[in-house]
Image 1 (cartoon, rainbow, N blue to C red):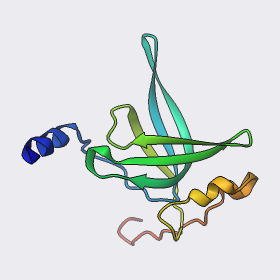
Image 2: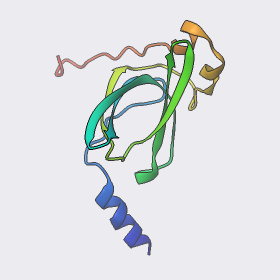
Image 3: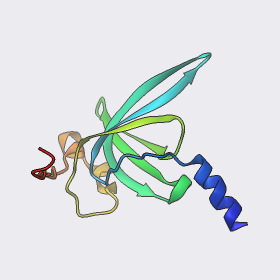
Image 4: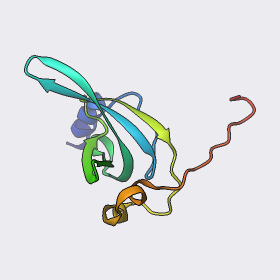
Length: 123
């Protein structure tokens, strides 16, 4: 039984998933189906949590929209998630950033930025 589940999960996993962590500012390109058309909508925000493993892994993205906090949960392995682009790396000391829900205005989107130095070979 476990082997069958593992085979099914392996069949539905994406080959390349972008590496991102909690606190990163990301763009999630999500496919939206409207009648017979399909379009891509971009949801930009801060990753405030990740949970699960394998095909059931999800992440929560929070953004401020017209002064109101909006959160959306995305499954990483979903075929509707077209791509994920990391805009900024965040430096945080927690696994879940639920405290951002209580913040207002600019403080709700402020996370320290992680400075990543490139190696000599990458330059």
